[in-house]
Image (cartoon, rainbow, N blue to C red; front, side, top):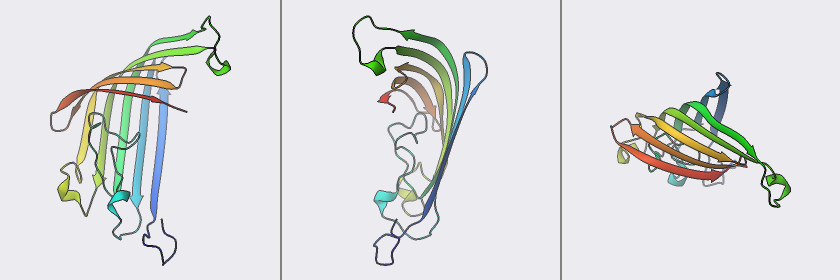
Length: 172
């Protein structure tokens, strides 16, 4: 951000994201995802660029309603999944070409996520920052056409709070 000395913002950051999905058997899968984001310059950045955990896929299980903003973060998302149902349905009525076969998948599983957000400037205003946070619990995922997802999970977090969360989306 800001490559010129005349720019109001001058920052350099690095981000890396890695995923691995390991089949353990015909129905069991172990999924791991790790991501980090590091600001490489020690200057102060505007608050609107403080996007840590709680945005997009960078959410710790159980913290869906909370945001942990900061300069640097790390997240590790681990899940053990079981494929309950995998079926290809061919509708009898006319469908667009890309939807002629509807794949239906149902997964059950258990999540274990951990994350850390470093916020050296505004950290005192959010008790979740500058400390490791974790969440865990069972989940159920329904996937249609390999793109539409509906997920339900019950999660516990570090301070003992727990709750039921529903999420849906379209993946392209």
